[in-house]
Length: 230
Image 1 (cartoon, rainbow, N blue to C red):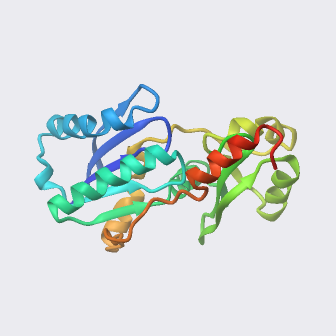
Image 2 (image 1 turned 30 degrees about the horizontal axis):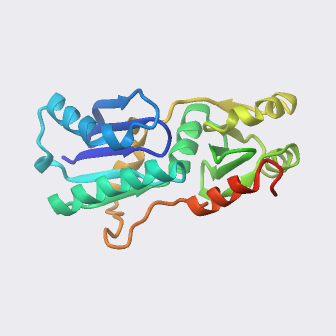
């Protein structure tokens, strides 16, 4: 039986969960926005105490690997890697876009899902997944009606999810396109990271870095250019 710690810090919510194989044991979330630096290790300690387990009993640490908040991903990654090095256990990483999309696919039965993670202004980190074949694309995209129409035409029956959906909700309503809303927490990772555990799909600790897609420097330069920047 595998005891797995799950860490999700890609958004403003800091979330951790513990599972035995596919069975969720408990979850802890920090309600204060952007509390990752001060709360992540506290949440992990509280979670382990609540479940009556020690860190030394963990078989792997599972990380939502981005894209998302640069700071959140950096803190989550450094904590996860530190635990794996200290305990000599593997790291399992999974795309945050994949988690969002696969949750939407499971709950709606749609053939395709488009996960949109807020990248500020009218941009989003975008992941399109097919229910039968998996990932189609992951990249940063500008959100506009033409782009949404292209996705709808290319992937009939597509459902939209993620925290950037409110930016295009009026477009989806106008085009009568479905959306699925769910709060991204660590427990949502469990079925997908356990699948990676059974397949022994582990990340290389020495080489692993989160998937930022757009780097912090790029985001900062864009902010300096002002609202009218391309």
